[in-house]
Length: 276
Image (tube, rainbow, N blue to C red):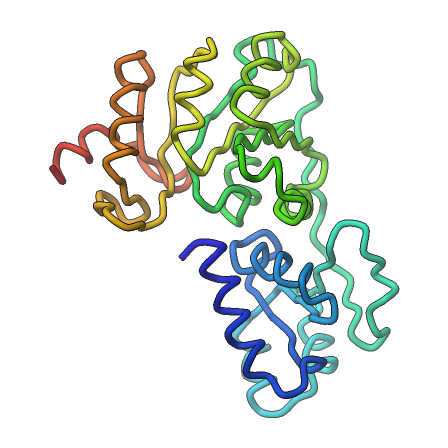
């Protein structure tokens, strides 16, 4: 389920609510797909409040009639309210404001990477979500996340959501494939540790066509779509996707599948052949 599906689900539930002021969303983790979708939904419906830190204890408290303010206070070690970039936290009622105890992620200092600044390239339809923000970025010790996507560049709502989701201390670039290629080839990121994320592999083909050298690509997540074929738990490919992967392979790009850092890498072309 992608962000668009989650937002549609929130909209359907919101439409059934007789009192919109009572509509609140509680998600699992701050940077997960449900939270990112909820923040995009909140941009359209500013009165909606969004929280992270859903746990069994919190769910049971709410199910037994405990007011949300009291339930959140009981779960304040993990629960907190989420805000849009630029939104004042003072706008939240004092009785439900919860302070996060999570320490900000501090990446390696910049200008310490003497090799290729592109330390990892990932295809992920969810872009910056829980696994990327809390696992991959830390494991890679990335100093910058680069999201490459033509459509997102033109969407203020999606850009705002990504800025909210990026871990503390990590820079964020949101670029078109041509814009990313131009900056990479100009050496703008030398010394940095750049984690590139695209939701459509076609963006990577366009970068290679523009002259960018990609050594390897992790095909982590591609959502199911019309005409797609499931080749891994989190990856479904269309004929257009396969054509892009064939192009990348012919240009000496290693393709592999690895959901989380602790997983073993699996040769992506092997997955394609096994499901042919």
